[in-house]
Length: 249
Image 1 (cartoon, rainbow, N blue to C red):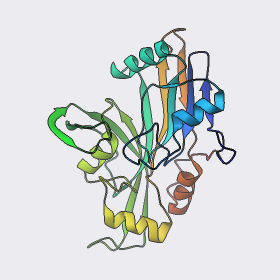
Image 2 (tube, rainbow, N blue to C red; image 1 turned 180 degrees about the vertical axis):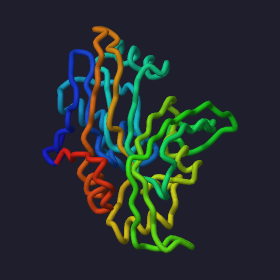
Image 3 (cartoon, one colour; image 1 turned 120 degrees about the horizontal axis):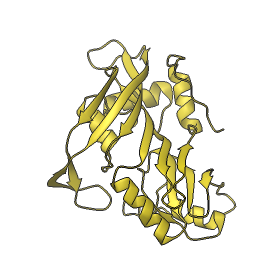
């Protein structure tokens, strides 16, 4: 790791697994998404702890939060299987355009991607399900289209399945796209967020992960504070104080 690269915050570490807080903008591994990129979570963590690591799952480049690795191939396969069998509880936090319903379930199949980087969709679909709960709302004095203000929701998301871009695509399907989503979101609302609130990232974070340790059978719960840029966005938006989150910085 270069001296200019700060250590990745470690959220959990035992003899089989290590979980980090991945910052927004960091790729998990080398990808054609950005062939010029030279920094990857897998490489930085390997150099930081001095041993090879194996990514168990992935989160999108612009998403921040919990990312877990196996410390050997057997551990990686075992926990990856738990993800595939839906034995891992995952929680995310997002800010969306509009006032979402108080709670609900999005059961909407998603088209698979033909490429590993999620750029080309196929005609084949996969079942996909996401539970959500609205935590707070805010109304900002900036007009959007025919509306005199911009309304936002703070939402807890619990994906039951693990499809590519599932949360971003499901919220867009409901017409409550996530703020800062340049692929599936609303360009006009993203522009307002940038110009008036100073938001230059996707407001989506992986905040909690729970699973049964495949070797010790211990119940593991990993929580992750919000990245500073996400917390600053919440502070500027001034959501209802009923939802309080602490920044790691």
